[in-house]
Image (cartoon, rainbow, N blue to C red; front, side, top):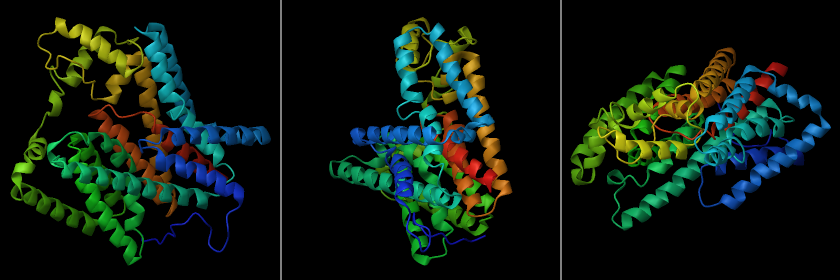
Length: 410
């Protein structure tokens, strides 16, 4: 079904009240600036303002906590408990505690899961849907504009995107915000579709320039989920043809600048993930303490790996580059309890999203699909090949909780 969506935070013919502008504006800025570097002072101010707002709303209306009476929040709490429990067995309590504070609080998954639903509690479902769509589009556009400028500056100094791994850090933002392209395609306006084509081309160039194969795989699968969900067979065919044409062009146009890119495309075991590489060695260490783990925090992993590498001359990497897998990382740090809790979060969130898609129509369906695509691509697909950041999980869960609550109320 084709839909036309006005890309505005205002209801047709009405002006938003100051309270709504405040609520929607806070969450909008929080999402848009989340993946932007160099503005730490302003980014840190947003969670503080959201926290103050949430406390005021909770004091005025205790019923808001009903938003959190569900399995999703229960699994998030269990995950937090497993992280705290890992402190007992941590090889360095300070490192684990600092890592936990950063990942759960400040802009972490627990705080975001709590603050976003509370701040948006008084907003209508329609306004929340528009907020999600506009936030993802704006965040993706802004991040691509910044990274495109960085690519341009690098090119002027002889740094070729397809030959350098220095742009790898943007891959998280690109994968997480990829669903921002979905509503642009489903808008009937020709100029909006033109913007979709332009942004998609820029997205593909930037994504390839990261040389992050996990990001490529996640993006491909995310795109297929979206296209199959809407039965976009023509767009699937066009995408395959353009991909094939692009591959031919890469091989023939200035091949001296694309050697590393082509090697990445042909590789079947990038970063020597298995056997004695990143994931294989992580699993070896985990099997020594599979139940309790070593303590939460990536620096704990680095320290343990670097201490033990001398006892394993067959390990490929003589200095830790991480487990390259979020599930192994949590298992390593929090033991089997932490792994089960994290898998519980993944299963409950995914099943809730799928059920929500099947029970709603556009624009609700599109919004749930955007959250599903982002969640599946970032944490399930890319999380199997990269140590993705757990903190943005709170954005997806916070938006899902408030949308789920609003649908139950209607």
